[in-house]
Amino acid sequence: MDSNVKSMIDSGQTTLGIEFGSTRIKAVLIGEDHTPLASGSHTWENKLENGIWTYSLEDVWAGLQSCYQDLAANVLRQYDVKLTRIGALGFSGMMHGYLVFDQNGQLLVPFRTWRNTITGQAAELLRKEFDFNIPQRWSIAHLYQAILNGEEHVKDIAFITTLAGYVHWQLTGEKVLGVGEASGMFPIDSSINDYNPRMLRQFEQLIADKNYSWKLENILPKVLNAGDNAGSLSAEGAKLLDPTGTLQPGIPLCPPEGDAGTGMVATNSVAPRTGNVSAGTSIFAMIVLEKELSKVYPEIDLVTTPTGKPVAMVHCNNCSSDIDDWVKMFAEILENMGHKPSKGDLYSMLYNKALSADPDGGNLLAYNYVSGEHITGFEEGRPLFVRKENSNFNLGNFMRTMLFSAMGTLRIGMDILTQNEQVRLDKLLGHGGLFKTKGVAQQLMAGALNVPVAVMESAGEGGAWGIALLAAYMKNKTSNETFEAYLDQKVFAKEGVDIVEPKAEDIEGFNQFLQRFKDGLKLEKAAVENFK
Image (cartoon, rainbow, N blue to C red; front, side, top):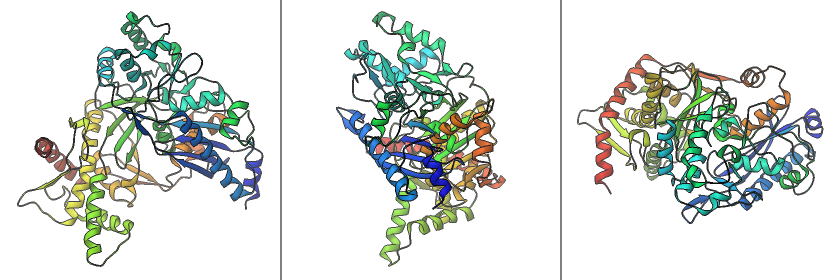
């Protein structure tokens, strides 16, 4: 056992990050060099109640306490020391949604999570009013929809916040949010790192006839930046987090942030001209902009980094699910022939076949639309594979086409940024299941998006690590040290990064596939309409 680590934990020279994900609450304790020392977790699930996707507040606290106890038990087992003091603490969570409280701090209606698609009318009206894209999951869309619905509770609202903001408030008494998290509640003006004043005024005019006793700016959380002190753990908060009473109060907290922001932090994608692509069940790119976009695009969501820099998000519902289904069938064929390759070996073999295929995938076509895809205008999807009588149909071309199909819709969204808005990118950081087979999706995506794609040797610990880094920055930063410089020089300087440059033949091959993909959307539409 490292006595230095034991001493570091015992003397409170650590930082703790806790993130509320959709299926798991995770805690990561990091040391002075920012590397994880221990972690804890708790599994939970949202519930569909009365047509609303929700988590109960009882589940929030039971889950947080279980996650923290798991962490404390792991610290004791690994280092033979009790966790009594921590140098800094931060909370992160799923962005957006609707948590509203009255003046006594009582929840007015069950938590409405980001997953609900019940605010279409409000989102469309706000988009037109603000001349700014307001997705259905944003808090302001939920609030306005409740107003349009004439819901009785609205008049009693004293505070509206997110999941991370709620937990932070209960532990510190502070009604605050980090700017990145706040940008998923209401549009942010990056020139002042605060809610957009013009849009606040427009919203007040929209609801003036309701004569509510509150003003929107007074019920929203206060906006803070990365590095700001966001209060400290109260005695009551310490008991909420650790009912055993072992953890001492007084720990400084950084501003609570959203999972999009902590993902940017954990991949060091917070500076302009950088971005990250998360590719698993869904695929989305977060691109840090040098300036605001010139117009509104319904396909592009606009949020910010934890330091308030504008970020364009291209989100696609479908990525690897269709590929996974094909791989399962290939595994079934092999098992019926008496072979049982490991899942990792099978994926590796199939993905690597794509690298030796024709650059365009052999004139094959596939759509990975297990569900709808708003960028291309589909409410529903039908996975589809099509070939001509003279297409070069072999395993390598099939796999290349399937991987291309996982990237096709993302490229259509990215073209809005790179072609219409002339957004420039130095590199993208790839993470998620699609990149598990070393080098394959990385090379194909570099060609598909015509940008260098990097994959870190260590995937870190995801969002919980990201919020721990934000807490460490608040605790350790020197005067005038930017968060971007802190990450570059003190966190990621020694991180091994594998960068793949786009190859000319991959760029040309993907462009040929993409033209087929766009032309063939009529086939996908016909499948949706005629295969019920």
